[in-house]
Amino acid sequence: MRVCMILEGCYPYVFGGVSSWTHQYIQAMPNVEFVIWCIGAKAEDKGKFKFTMPDNVVEVREVFLDDALRMAKVSGGKIKLNVTKEQIEELGKLFLGQSLNWEILFDMFQNKRINPVDLLMSEDFLQELIKICKENFPYISFVEYFHTIRSMLLPVLYLLIQDVPEADIYHSTATGYGGLLGSIGKWKNNKPFIVTEHGIYTREREEELLRAKWVLPHFRKQWINLFYLFSECAYNMADRVTALFRRANDTQVELGCPREKLRVIQNGVHYDRFCNIPAKVEDGYIDIGAIVRIAKIKDIKTMIYAFAEVKIKVPNARLHIMGDVDDKEYFEECKQLIEQLQTKDIIFTGVVKIIEYIEKIDFVILTSISEGQPLSVLEAFAAGRACVTTDVGCCRDLLEGTDGLGEAGICVPPMHKERLAKAMIAMCQNKEMRDEMAVVGRKRVAQFFTHEGSMEKYRELYKEVL
Image 1 (cartoon, rainbow, N blue to C red):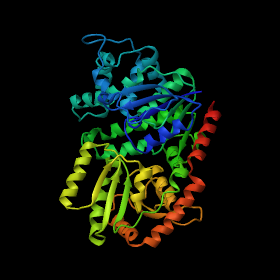
Image 2 (cartoon, rainbow, N blue to C red):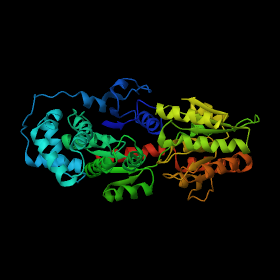
Image 3 (tube, rainbow, N blue to C red):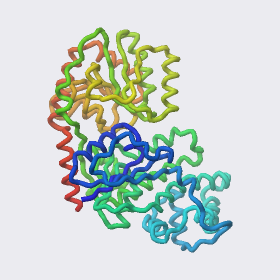
Image 4 (cartoon, rainbow, N blue to C red):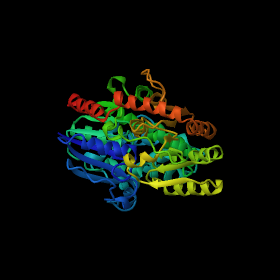
């Protein structure tokens, strides 16, 4: 069996939860051949893998969105393309944010091989754009509208012309650009398509776009609608759609996924690798660990603000931020914030071997503003470490449980530095509570969140769709 695993903005270019999951997933299925079809932002990252490919990866296809800017036109000047009125109207729905027949676009670019640059410079496209702008955006500069639509469409159309790898199953870890490629694979080769969402991609992109400074306010809704259209396409084309917990399935239904396609497959960790890690040797410090990549969505700044408050009450506390730098600009902002607050004992470790480093940690924190079912929390539990997390994804369920075992940590609202600081101080000052929570967390993972149990469910899913 050959599976085309479609990834966006993660494996194999960056470390992080989805990347770790993907690497372990491939290793857990040695009898399956994997084609990695990965979407990156910048072509300068080509071949710069942070993982060594497992032996059962038979091909890696790299697609970079900024290569869309380097696409060449075939025809010169003002051109008239051989496209139908229906095709142009479907394209218009794409930048109006209206439901569309994606198969018409797939046919345009996969079978008829229409050049995206030629299309965007054509008289047909220009007239459709003028018509839509007059009808829907009469008070907006046409020049602004024209360039916004081009920047929205270029990467989309670039993906639509990609050659599709041969596979028995197409499996995407998101509904965005990756979901679009998976949908093309399903349509072109008539093979099963699975979407596995670790977080709800559409909602995460919406949160980012609402805060993004580069998006002009009057076009923000259009950008958000574009990603809703991607999810609509992926959910409609997919044979099965999985999430990590039931409430995420409910959100997928709200976004248009037919409930009969949905499954819950929880994350799992290698319990046997973590369960024998000893408690930290007391050395006069309280060491707090954050297993997290440096990115805005992980809200490192709130973590820093809260730790500054912790240091006032617990001067012997130290914060270890263990992870790769995903956003260099944000990393610099975090370092500047530490300087402004004059807070000591915040250590950016970079990428470390968590199994070894966690021996130095008393408890673990997570301050994300969006999560699914974080592996870092499950790994901390398996290692016998209590956690403080924000109330995102299924973190509250992980910490409080519905299994009668008890609480394995403290859950606080996202972006609430006072509540976060209070929870961290309580954890620092009460070793007995930490130890009791650690026992609960370890039991919970052993019973419900093992790696092998999770992988067996995916194997069964592959048999089901085939």
